Amino acid sequence: MKEVIFGLHAVTTALEKRSEDIARLLVQKGRQDKRLQALLDLAAERGVSIATLPREELDALVSGRHQGVIAEVHANEAPRYSEKQIPEILAGLASPALILVLDGVTDPHNLGACLRSADAAGVGLVIAPKDKAVGLTSVARKVACGAAETVPFVQVTNLARTLKQLQEAGIWLVGLAGEAEQLLYEIDLTGPVGIVMGAEGSGLRRLTREHCDYLAKLPMAGAVSSLNVSVATGVTLFEAVRQRAG
Image (tube, rainbow, N blue to C red; front, side, top):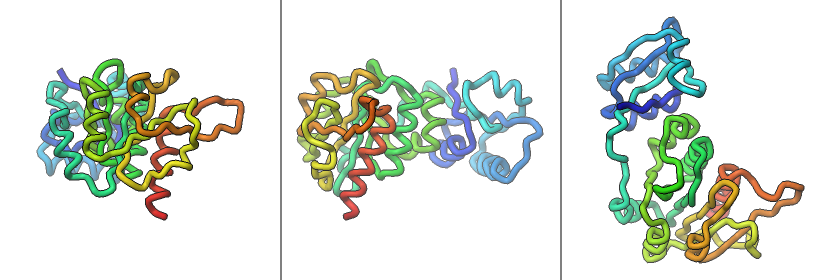
């Protein structure tokens, strides 16, 4: 059984970071351009086999824009990071640590967008629960534009227990919640911090909210009551980046 990664950037990053997991590349027949040729050269260098198929066959394999290239990846490979590695990952983070926790994001597009923002903001670890949350599907990887291969992503069995583990490691947890009294911009994000984002629609679960050291909200001036979780994640992470650069 195999899963797929598609799109030039996502496949290139997969070749760079985990070529040993790629069974083969499927490339659109007749397509020739510099970006694709660079990808094919990298595949040849890493010893990955290549097959050419008509565009129609590639279109039938994925539900997104593949840009003429699909990578078949061994789906039975163990996740790159496990719960047991969290202490090791935390110990290796640059100081002050910036972590992202996603409490039940179910849309792969949102997960991919959150990972892309996390990579851009310098997040050292992204944590999500295993239950009632999406994992690194092919769509999430495509939307992440390579960030799924660069940012450690760990799915945990007990999120509340993991949050306590982060606190014991000296990380302050800031949860985003519309009912919070403080604005995000009033909270100091310059130290070791974990940004905790809730699920689409329902937000933070009660137990997750109770484990946060602070709750904060974004100012909403219009008629819309909340932002999409991936947009809110990007805004929040880059507020931390802004404070740390000051």
